Length: 137
Image (cartoon, rainbow, N blue to C red; front, side, top):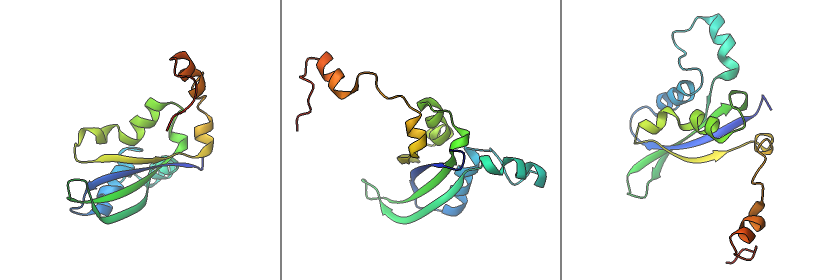
């Protein structure tokens, strides 16, 4: 599981140096800083550092503004198998920006399996609510 990645995709304004912005997100939400570290410290932190997976320019948002999609990989080794840990890692500081939106999360199967899931399941919840236990279309 330590070699697997959670990949978060963000929608950002398509302005400026997107590579620099993506790298800033990847490093800022994992190891915090990179440029001012000595080589030995960089080697220690490398397994915990986020990586830029993809940059897609030229997307159009719902309001017709030009946006880009940045996909950032976060090492699973940085996370505990709980939703607060996941959300803090992939969106914590970014949530304060207001112009960056988290639009997708891809989770490795091993990470997903670490979650026990709902105790009752869909049928159990529907039955408890008196909905008959089935899905309607």
